[in-house]
Length: 160
Image: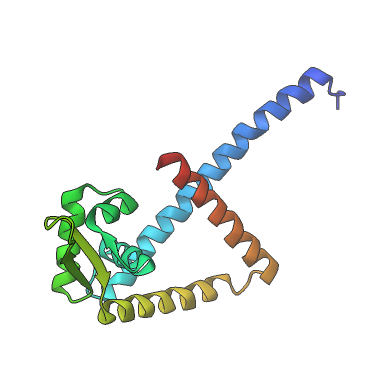
């Protein structure tokens, strides 16, 4: 094998980030696709869509939020956020009330029924995740959670 000179080592080092970026993109894309399809299957057993479940989670996490905040958090247009809020209200999972300052603006808050549904879905998710990750050592599970969370925050900051 021929010795590598400084120029060859430098070129290899410069290529590595590209290869790493391709591998990371592939892994994140595969994970997103797997979660998306899993989410579609998971919500079949409940009476909400995937987007409605994300909206319910966002509203419950905050306790109260405006429809505009919901649109921003889920990267939806205002009319879509309004339709989602209306459907969640019809199902009894969310309460919409007018704000005192602006009668047209709506504040969303979860109902007890909504909090209970979200808790049930989250428990089911955690059971499924525990089953999927049971063959990983605990340190690897913790490291994966930290890394995936960090990548998600980086992507969120970049595109928000």
